[in-house]
Image (cartoon, helix red, strand yellow):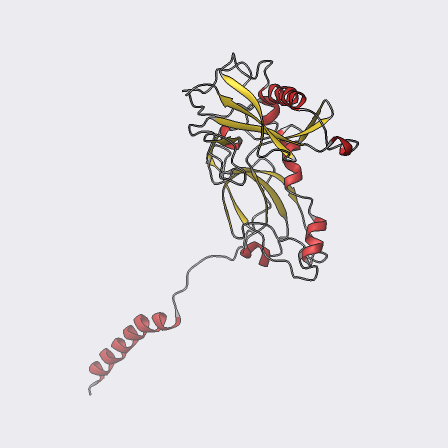
Length: 301
C-alpha cells in the first residue's frame, strides 16, 4: 500500500470513530443541576377538584397499627370553575411522633368538627328546651401529601369540606357562606318526595319536593332533665321546627307565602329522632336549596 492510500485509510478510520464513539458513550448536553421542588402544603381557602386514595382517613381501631397513607387532594390553580370542595384547615404533622393510628387521631382534630365554624354557623340550636341539629349534605375528608412528597419528608394534613358525589361552580369561598347566604345548593340535604331513612338524598339542584333543615332528639319526659333531650309535645316540636326553618332560611316566613309547608317528620310512633323539613305545597318542585334564601324567590317550577 503506497503512502497516499495509507493516509486515506487513516482519515477514514478517524472519521468513523468521530461518528460512532459519541453514540456509544452518549452525547453531552450543556446544563446545570437544579434541586427538585417539593410541593408546599395547600393553603386554607384553596379549592379542590378531586380526592383520590382511601375513602376515609385512618381511625384508631388498632392502637398499634402503623399509619397508612391519607387520601390525596388535587388543588385547583384558582378557586373558580367546577370543583368538589375547599381546604378549610391545614396542620403540620411530625413523622417522628406520629407513628400509630391512635397518635394520628390524637394529633389531628376531627375534620368534621371544623365544618360549621368554617361555614359561619353552629351545629345545633336549642329552641324552647329542645336541641335541633342543622342538616347539610357534606363530606369532611382529611388529606395529606402524595407518595412522592411523603418520600421527601412532607408530613402535613389538611381538611377538605366537599360535596358528596357532586361538583359545584365555585364563585366565592365557602368560608362564612352559611352566614352570608351563599352556601352552594349542592350542600343542601334534599329528598325527591319525602325523607328516606338511610336512603340516598336527591341533589338540591335536581327537581325535588322536600328539603331537610334539621333533626331533633326526642325522649320521654322522665329523661328531659338533660341538656340534649326533650319531652316536648307535637305542637311544641312543630313550633320549634318553624323557628329553626326561619333561622336557616333567613326569613320570618319559612312557608314563603304558603308555597311551602314546615313539618316535623317522625319515621315511627315513639321514634327518638324527628326531622324538620320544608316541603312543596301542591305539585311543584324545587330546583335549588332554601338555605339562606331570605327574600329571594323560591327556585320553584
